[in-house]
Length: 155
Ligand code: FES
Image (cartoon, rainbow, N blue to C red; front, side, top):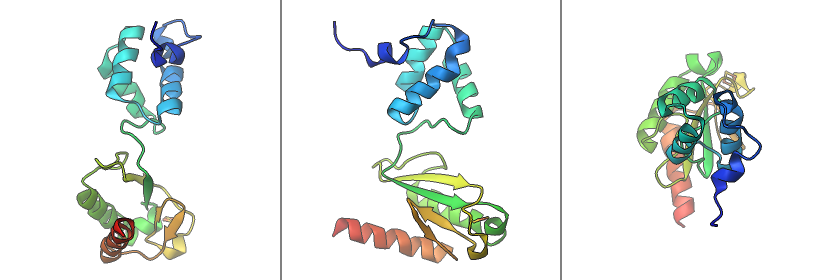
């Protein structure tokens, strides 16, 4: 019999609707996100509609619906960053990468996230790419930053 990863995911569960959250957590831990295929399998197994599953999962910030990107861009929208233009920086990234927060680019290179505070409010507006924090950013700086990264990765 061929190996079925879903059978491993639900091993130890009874197939009760009340088990939805721990099953979603296990899928997310293994794959890093909840794919439409995973949601479909869970829906059939627990006899819960896919809409209900999405409704529950979107309530919790821990669940993602797209594959994690290679690099994570976190835009701070805490109070200090918000008043200094954090929202405009997020808008530029959304347009430039053609994704919404919580999504990854089609090539899998970037994942965009909004965060409440990166812990360096005096340097607002702030964003981080992976572990590197960029202070006192601007719309222009974001364009330059992405271009520099693209040139480096193409080299
Ligand atoms: S509010 Fe942005 S770093 Fe604190």
